[in-house]
Image (cartoon, rainbow, N blue to C red; front, top):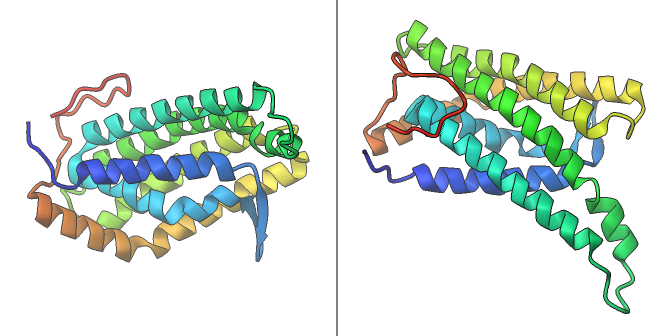
Length: 224
């Protein structure tokens, strides 16, 4: 099996960004005309990572990275919940605030699991299939096209599971639409960055995966 120089580093960065997303997702912020989760600030980095994993290394490696992400969120939820339920030490005056802010993480993680499973696998599938259909041409069509499809599922699942009955329904719907539109707009805006990263990685790794005979089931960790 081919050994890659940069794949592990990309996966580690992806895991770190997912931890940031899980902790910041519960805060709703207002930026201009957009009302969205603070986790949306991580979108440019996570998009470049997601696009390059599938475009450069192929669907099988991106599938493995997605399962690693899901596993890391499980660990985060377990230990965060344990920290909340353990009795605070005498003199620790911030237990209520700690619990109020981080107590939502398990629900956020549940939304993240569903969103990851549907959104990431849809993104990888659409991108890989479009790469075959376009015969490796027009990278922008598959990065943007996969985002339009995947983020419709990802955003809806995450916001409904994580924030339904937490915020008013009108704000929830507005947040979903705002986040989806913003995510697609960001994908378009960072396309030059994605092109540069993909070009550099392909040249450095001497690889350009082509999933013309790939089994696209998400329920596998098969590599190569």
